[in-house]
Image (cartoon, rainbow, N blue to C red):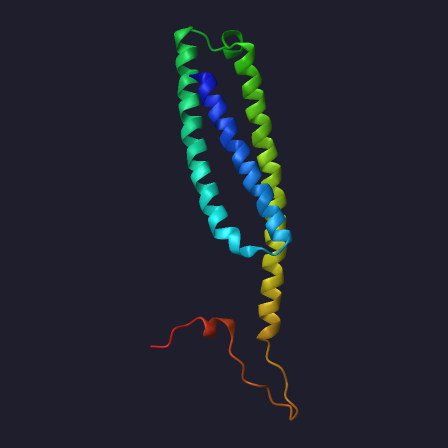
Length: 144
């Protein structure tokens, strides 16, 4: 069971890495229409990973209790140890991809914030009076 859970967890992590890599490519190309679908897929995969990880943890505890040992390294075979190392590496890779993606998201957000700010600044007209322009907040309020 350990091998099955490990393989499943690694597979989910690979999918998350692939989607995040594609998200980075999409944000660089300004393909923002794919964001909603991507977020939905990633949320499903995160839930799947959490469930698999929980089952993996329970199985590791069961194996440890079964062998009356707290030293899992002596109980687990080399293949399982190798897959645990591989899973950790995939988690670290996903962490790095998420950090990279977050940087792009922040840059895009700051760009749009500054654009909105510049669009709605009050400007002087030719006679020295301020033009009346709507604020971003007033545009989003519903008038009933």
